[in-house]
Image (cartoon, rainbow, N blue to C red):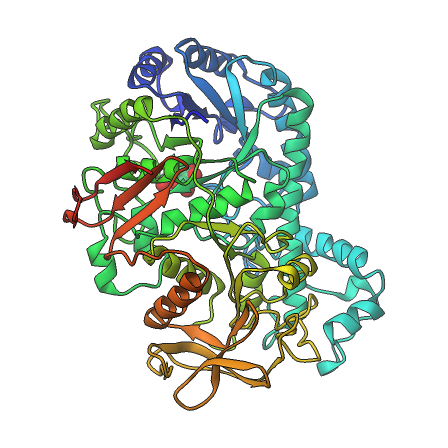
Length: 633
Ligand code: GAL
């Protein structure tokens, strides 16, 4: 696979006289892709039903003739103002019952049938017009589903769609009442029309009700996206992508991704470090201009799984962004490092966001490859360097990993619905395990929760999966490698009840979670072989082999054959030890890495990424600050 670079461009933001020069400069820089159109609805259809195609025809032609391939976005993330006159009730409503306003973006409720019809109309018009355009080489649906907290909507439209969804799922209210346990607190329903949304209740809503609503909301995203892909496919053979975000777990990306050809994501490492991670102030200081050393890699591996092997970066941070609490300037070298790290993890393309910094509106403080005066900004030269380096690099794929981590969006909803301890966040838990593997220098694959084939891996981790799927349980029963399951795995039924017999109910493992406790972060529970459990632990009844214990005698890990159950949330010291033991017992070589140094193998090369602001010395080579090093395997 040939790796390529691209950029995001907004012809509608610039005088037409500038387009040709912009296009020529992009081509000259060696860019392959240019993504356009995703916010241009008010220019494509300024008045309802009156399309203005000419400008877009010319923009696509100008870019295409310069040698660029266009990724055309559907503009449904930014319905124009007139749409609200058509559908005054199309806005999403927050959990407090307040409609969200016009004047930014993503101001729609996924469930609004009238808005969906208008989306189908604009996507049809776009696909009919450009579906066979030789320069349109890929599509993007909408923009960043779920960004700005936009999946859950408590609108009337959502309420009605939810009731329909419930009627289909349960067929009768008796079945629903039974499944949810509505006898508790006299919550039983006689008809589906009596059922409300799980907000504005006096105290917490039934968690089964909340979980059903979360599943419904996720399905709404998938069906909204499918509406668009089905239309595009009728008119175009070009692949379809969506640009996902970092640490958005409100919808099941695997389900949405099933209708797409390519998963892509928008990587803003400094913004994410500033506002999306539970890390120490010292960690934030250390990596303030480089980003967290594992956050990007995690999403690369996640979206490689969501895209069933095909994935891109659709937007790559090129300089300071505008939206985080603090917006540092990336160290020289980071715009190159981030791109190479994506390629090492198998990205087909990396597109920088955006071509030129806009001197107006919300993102005027957001850097681009060019300054607002068209002078190259810092990342421009780094992008040029990546282009040069790509020419010299053989066309190879990312290496297959020996270790897999199962990731499950429904578990994120489950533990938000019922954390039972303030710190029990699913992403945080899964990411802690991922980081632990990365600290040991391992290549990791992320697997969907219904993975049915584990044989390619020596080690499989499945922390915090609320309900282990049938295919995964069957795969675990056959699995010959080492699997580490828990904490809290398989502790809920699909309907969010506690299973009896009690969890974890793993094939061939005699262990029962008799009790759980959550603890404040300053109450660690020491393990007798070093390190601690934090936040959460479980008391196991077992006649099986206890592989290690807490110092107060509660079993910490029990095992049978290759299957182990972990009865708590390990801190980093405990994780390092547990993962090292697990991997080395399977014949894997671990290479504990210094802080901020990370690696990833392709099928021919080992790549090293130095996220530190100082050089790292590795006996046989030195990696400069914010530098990349690769060597032939
Ligand atoms: C992304 C978004 C872009 C732009 C960018 C700024 O979330 O897709 O349109 O707003 O952030 O960092």
